[in-house]
Length: 208
Image (cartoon, rainbow, N blue to C red; front, side, top):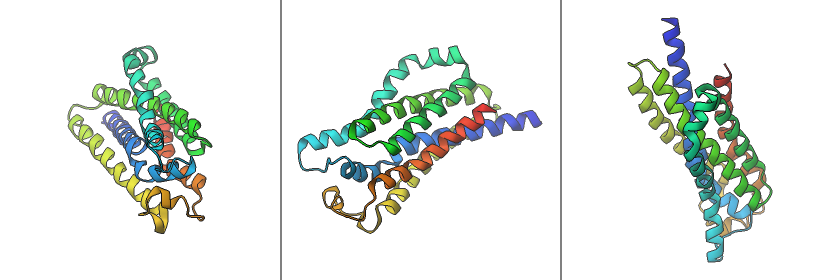
């Protein structure tokens, strides 16, 4: 009975942390990052070129995640499920941390590509691990938890954005960038903290 509970607990924790990380780092941060990054990297919507540059900051995650999808099975077979989960947390943590301290536009692009690789690892290996290891009478619940956790982190991302952007949160990016009280670099790092905590949680669970 104890072994049964331990496996269920591990699967539940990984499912929650993995889905939450995927939801927050991929989509949840968008409401605040859309404004913060436009101001921080001077790409306010003044030209069509800036619209493309802003869009690339979000598309860069897919540029990292898509190529990994081609080798995901080989990576899992080579390193095993547990080690791949550990590496997925480490890669995602590194990408999100770099994103939080990126000083330039291209540094942020690079960070988002790394984050995309990590999220692709997380979203491919954790469901496989849970499908293989979870007790059969818990698999349906854990699958539902994955979806619930993703949506919960979308909400958290909106709340973080609402809090970080402050009283001028409803201004368009061009007007918000003129706000002298906006500590953009600090806001960007704080926005990334929940993602780093979730990735760290995956590392801790996988390391055990």
